[in-house]
Image 1 (spheres, rainbow, N blue to C red):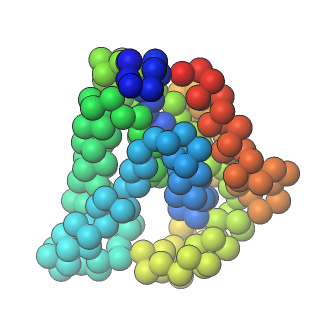
Image 2: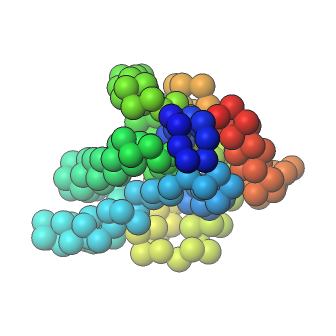
Length: 200
């Protein structure tokens, strides 16, 4: 696509990973380094999710029950992706931040996203923010968000239900955001940003 600034490639960059991995921070760093729009699922949909769960006589901070998974989660991703497509159709690259756990591991979902990106003249990139259980737990404690209460209170149950080896099915960039990582998060994201900008 040709813009007033010259020729560039529109990009959809999904930033995915488990709760507490550091997705939002990585997404903000990538958006700052590239100048692309930053769309975070929680920012876009949290007020809707909390009101919906309350209306369903549930806990507004629930992120694990069947009520959330069946009624709220699909709407969260629908809102996020509609905002993504609207930006891409306007020629604006997007950094989309969400867990994308089921989505990035689903070949049909990723194929649909890739096809729609091609129709919009955009490339499709995925960044996986990798971490370990100890690092994720420390971050959840530090951010002190009500939506994390169940996870922290039922940590063994929560962690038994996740696959720490999960990775996207598509080619992807891995960001090592363990506390013991050899390179700072900002440095890793900057390297990826420069590669993406260099390919534009």
